[in-house]
Length: 360
Ligand code: GLY
View: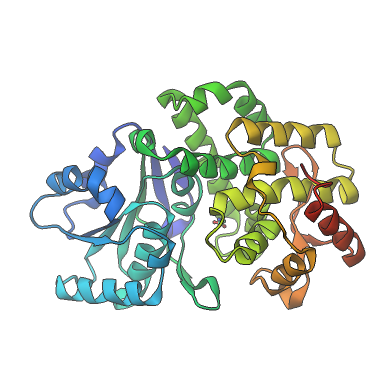
């Protein structure tokens, strides 16, 4: 169990095998809707509905990022109204990041805010998107441009669900796991190196320990800075180039975690330049990513133009007044707030990266 301490909005993250069985415990007899997608519904919809009972309804959305849209959000609100949900009503987000973000935003906006429970079924959702209260949808102009901070009532991360997660999605989740270790916890990085085989075999004990540690790290950061006024931005380590790559590939070529896996070695190349980060340690990070199926050379989209990437970084919603900022590390497990690196240095590094000489 990991506690997120946010005063009246505090809640508990329960991690482990069979956690979906605890749903009724955290719902305290309240009634509502389970929101899921077609893939997750096929695997876990029926047992969850059986546990919740006939008072509960279910909304099954199409699987995929396109669902995180205004039409699906307003459609969900209409279904909530048709189901007669009042302010005591509650939603359960059963699925990955798309389901969690959309459901959370519907809960945040229905009747000016009702409760919801996150039941993440992907690694990325367990270690990142279900924790910390960021909810939202994409607009045509960009990802996550409409949203709200709305903390869940509880998070139930049932690690049994990771057994059915496709390999590519598991690897993408591992990118966010490695992010926590590189940016914030050197000891955890060593543990990941030592336990990489057990993690790759998806051994339940290793997975549980790993998810708990990520949630603990994120809980600590969110408790200090719930609304990303400062410190929470460290969670964007690897995301400056990552977001630009997602944008440059039309949000279809790379999974978010894959883009972050590409962004981290680049952020370390910037850290070597600006902070004296050890190139040898950067090599260990790349080796660990490879071990988790995140082969940088293979993931890298071909034919990228460094100017296009720089333009995408300038337009990112996290770039204040067009200033491109990177979370940089001075040593393993130790990063600072995002900072601007001199434009000429960034251009040189980006050119080098596009020509395969930086951050491999
Ligand atoms: N995914 C970064 C955050 O929750 O702040």
